[in-house]
Image 1 (cartoon, helix red, strand yellow):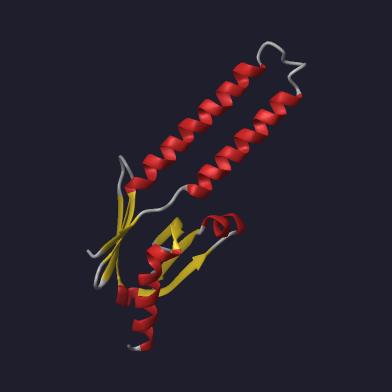
Image 2: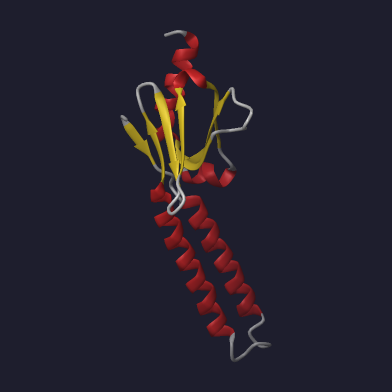
Length: 146
């Protein structure tokens, strides 16, 4: 296999931080009603947020898309591992989509479809376009006959 691509969890981390800020602001606004527990509640909110961010950073290391000469190998999982091997000639469509937040951070979602009825065999969120443009280019060139 030539290249390996891992997701970049920057959007998910940003969402976690924004939610933690929102909850902390809410606790700060109602602190007069929960006087004795406001600081402990804020500490719990940020502790859970930090643990969630650490888990995301570790979990993304266990999601890999390897780009070979003739196929894609997708692996996902820590304890239970799912592996999907898709030959380029079986690929019917590739899509790269970005939400507003993903565009801000320069990542998006890659979907690779095959002719099978089981749906999208590869769906990989939080991938930088620079990391997967080889897949998109190879697929386009094969479809054009180059």
